[in-house]
Length: 206
Image 1 (cartoon, one colour):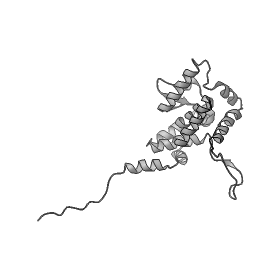
Image 2 (cartoon, rainbow, N blue to C red):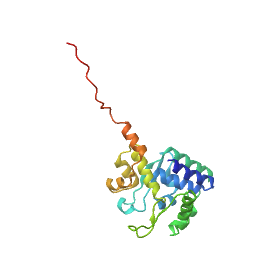
Image 3 (cartoon, helix red, strand yellow):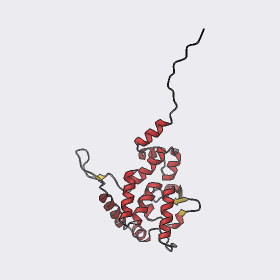
Image 4 (spheres, rainbow, N blue to C red):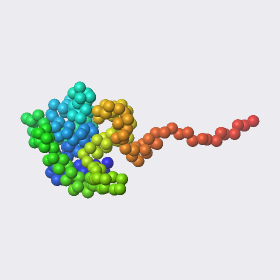
């Protein structure tokens, strides 16, 4: 988590409130970049502490039904702070300039900001070509935050079917593909195992 904290901190230091909140939404909801950039104030319910979003990629499979995702406390705090900083929101979108670009097909500006930020944080984004891999491919990107969200849920014993519902996966197998085993998660798992240490029986007196 220290790496993620560093990424968010650097965004704050650079004076990029939009970028910082995108990262927070990615980490604490698992939403894809398009769904983060085009999120609206109607999708944020502070009274119920929910972020409800129709996932663009799976819209046709869910009949346009919004997926409710509980707000983690850090995300709730960040969203309220952002809301207070912009005053009473007159815009539909949280990030109106970027959302209008994105909906018009101009997603490059948001992606360029993210990619530049990752580079500034010293994060290698691309896998280099090898004998087996004929071209460069993305190693780390905004989508990696989705993997992080799923892994954090798994590490903290969130039932797989609940994670599946929040990220909009059609099958549990797909969710498991996104779950990365971590040492912290393994330690937690081992720490709750029952004690079956064999003990010597006390000799019975005759």
